[in-house]
Length: 330
Image (tube, rainbow, N blue to C red; front, top):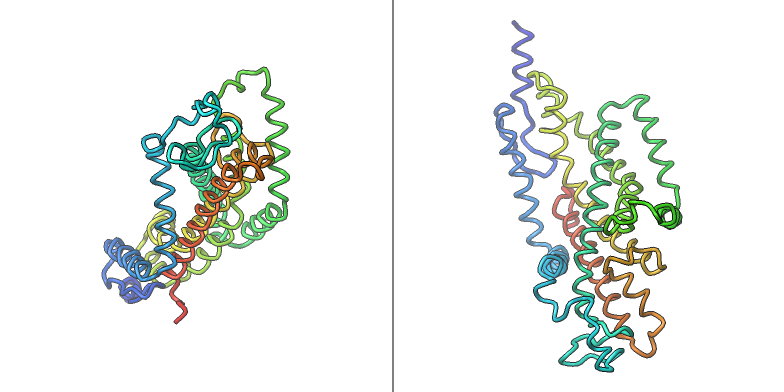
């Protein structure tokens, strides 16, 4: 009887404050939704006061706008070469072509706008894969501990020392040669899909390390101990208590990774290893860098688009760090 009373006291002693400084409800596990809501609400309030984060969100919103509505706002179809027929290839910016035309007569503004969806698909797709793998590996390692933790962390460190960029170039080139003459060659955007998958498969280690650290910290918190005492299953503890509290730190890293993946794809395409069927900013640089002196606008425009997008995600990640970090710099 006395043991049951002690367990009940522990269960009701769900700590009054979360890591975010939000007051916890003193009730049972049914009130976990209120606690999570308070954590995210406080983070959002802090984010709204952060200028850096708001600038990053604005830049990302512009890219997302063109990513979804690009076909409706672009002045020309991306494959329209009418300027060449009018002897206006490599024409400077004008009212007819706001960012000029390139050496093939394409409208630069339209091609840059149509490159936004490719950038977003690469960034979001690759980081979705990396996040799933990283959270599974890091969360399992941090929660289980022991020998499994040691083995998984050594495996993670092995991936961290691999020169990802060189490996991606080799895999893309070999895969492109292997599929020639096969049914796979007819798959649309095969090279781009390959790049996305490879970026995701090799991009999970940093997320795994953060996930492990968060799971190690959170599994010892009082509200997790209370959940164990009242009989919450292991899956319930992980998915209802630990993972939601670990997500703020992981979201920051994911936002940084999106910008990094976009930049990586641009570098791959600039070297000529990209998907020739997809319109990407790196590909635009690859086709026009030789004419930098004659038609600089054809290279500057996609370069600026890459810069704005990566900067936006980096500033957004910085703002999220300040919003969800309980040890804010005063």
